Image (tube, rainbow, N blue to C red):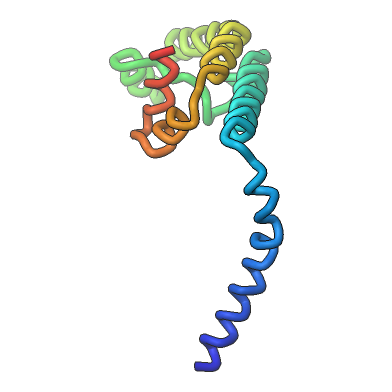
Length: 140
């Protein structure tokens, strides 16, 4: 019983600031929220494409480095322990550097797509499958 009382008091104390800010949330219109989301997504798109568009943006970051697809990638992995993957490694590096050069245009395309996003689109992306954002962008 004593634990429940303490837990209840802690939860009430933690929630108090949210209640204090309720008038701010009430004044926020859907238009304001939509504009804020669009601005945040547009800024994120520009920041990401700017970062990736720098020399080494893809190649220098293992988390975003583009692998060779399919048979080429499997062959590269098979040849690497033998020290024979150098031509495929060079191809992969060139592919990644080529992707870096496309980022300014990709940034403009992303910002254009974000400009047209609706709240319903954003909810669908968040609740959808892993590739829902890709599907949205392809449609735009």
